[in-house]
Image (cartoon, rainbow, N blue to C red):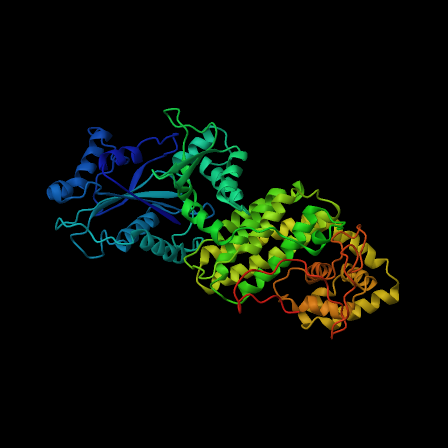
Length: 589
């Protein structure tokens, strides 16, 4: 149940709209479901042949405005309080009596008409559709004073949450004022009329978000906006300093045939120019290098290298989120940029789900928590590297590293949900969980071919060798429940351990290292998570069709010596996550 509050000055004009046909004849059977005294005239249901509905509507407007006229100049110019209350599409249809209860509770909650107060403000509730009502109140009390209505939106939201619970309706998550502004009804109707799948506000919000992902400078950000086909207008001070920006969609014009401009702050709170400026200044994206890129002899494509680098950084972000540190708030913004980057550059088979994941996580990047040490260089660099490398082909190493990265981002999204839940951020936690679901769907699409090939390789191993690896896997998993899940199909993991052993690694120690990187309880498929962790640690190709390399192959370095646990130390795969100690701890090794 969603309340939407506005202020106005024309009681009669609003009543004309509420009792009228609507902008597209969508209003049906407009009538009162409640009023301040229960006896207000109803232009919709007063059917006396001697009464013109327009006369009844004028009487109702006069009754509502009585105290406003009595107060004279003491009344505020914007004396009309208008609240639309809409039920969730999945809710049952409420009766008129139930909507009357909703209206009475809301005007009490916001202090318009407290229970038992004879001087409460006058109000009516009009219903002209099955799923919502409109409450109209005039903000002058019987004693001609203005009601105290501080934080009326928050109070209305809180009361709606209680009503949902008591009436058995879908319980929405309470907001905290950090969400992006939703499109207006006029914007939605215009989008439908012009055949757009979404409103210009939503299209622009996503385009601006994608333009800032991994951008190294303001100039690059504005260049990306123009390259995306947007109209961009910059606002400068007399001194020449840039003050802000506005964007518009080509072809989107108002009734005067002028472009409809949106400032960044009206698209989303974090897309205002000062906040983008601060993000670029505090987290300037540096060039991302990997051992393979340094050597100049890598046999992996640029998209594959970029995704491998991002996987290592994402693992470290998940660890920081699990540390319950408020400074992780900055990393959430970086995760949003990383999701935008892979959504723009991933193969067609996964692009829809990854785009949905990026849009969902956008809500999870904003809260009232502010990081004191907001260093996001590493993760913004990873996003930049992915965008600069271009799109993945969806097969071979490129497609395999997409699956590797997305598998890690599922755990990052779940860690973000826990981080937000611990702070009472209900909407952000729910957005993170929705992101994880979209990422799981994208992972299934990206991992289908490489995982199937790995399972076939595992089944082709000699029986004795395969049993040895199965024993190693069962012994390494610490929890019986995890062992039971992992035992369902260990072929892909066995094939991965066999390849790691061929390149000089100790499979038992390498598997233990992968398990200890971070928790596995939230993994939907323990085997798959371990496959990608082992392949990342051992620098194995993400796609089994690629040639496996020994740790020194193509890097120009000598083979690493075994460490105390017997495994050979794999070369690093990502830059260190830039954050002050002690919070910037790499995953346990």
